Length: 380
Ligand SMILES: *Cc1c(COP(=O)(O)O)cnc(C)c1O
Image (cartoon, rainbow, N blue to C red):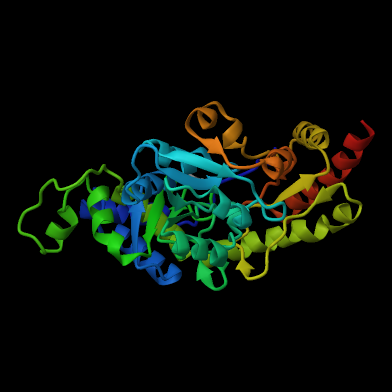
């Protein structure tokens, strides 16, 4: 079986974990956490990076920092992972779903302004497949309406929009190091803080609502409870694992990008025959090969293809069930405008196996079987 994803181990993970263990440094914010945060600050240009135990946790911190009150609205795509919405719903916020662009499957920036009401607090662009949303337009809208921008850059680690790292453009950015992402620690994430006025409160929220970070830096002589918060920091074992991955980030990207290009070249002919459409990288975007998906011409062919490939022991998968059509999405959110692209495109997405240790032979097999099943599905 060729799986859809297989986590890549760089080789130094256990060695770094052994170092944390030998030092007896197991709680969070030790030397490996500091190394990872510094790496993120240097490579993204954000003002402050804080490791979290997931991207979900980073989004929850962002919702607290945005001071979301019951009834406040947050504009986001419906074509995203549940955590994008859940983080705000947990604070009583209302996700307002707008449609996506047909080319990148990212939020359609031209629909955002019409969805703004006096209750709108934030815009949450999601960089699907590590391809940047139209951030210049989004930042301009946010500035004119005094809204916060929280980037869900879970899939965007080491990807860029007009030279700026994804997650470093809005007020806040949330990254994921889940094992299905490019750089991993099993579960893991980070909050990137670009708006300096949010740094101090972010540290407090992450440390159970206390000023413990200030205390450890010697800035206060005792620490105490001063705000709402939770425990959002990972232990050092996770950070040690992540550090081994961070050191190899360039190599990992290089291999993934090469595999992405292979799919892209091989599927050109199928695109010319109009049986599928390949992903589109918009101008100014440097993606990270987080994902290779194709859009089949019909929903029926997509499902037929996934099933046929599975019978040939190749695991391909569809992606999000749009949040506005989910039970919780209907209960807690609302849509603004038609969801035509979201509904139509979500039904046609198929994601290909793409992981560092996928061999050339295995990838060739995927390519050949995709071409064959596309035809078989048409006839069938
Ligand atoms: C993976 C993902 C998340 C959640 O990340 P976790 O680290 O698993 O919490 C959130 N949003 C998007 C768009 C994702 O792809």
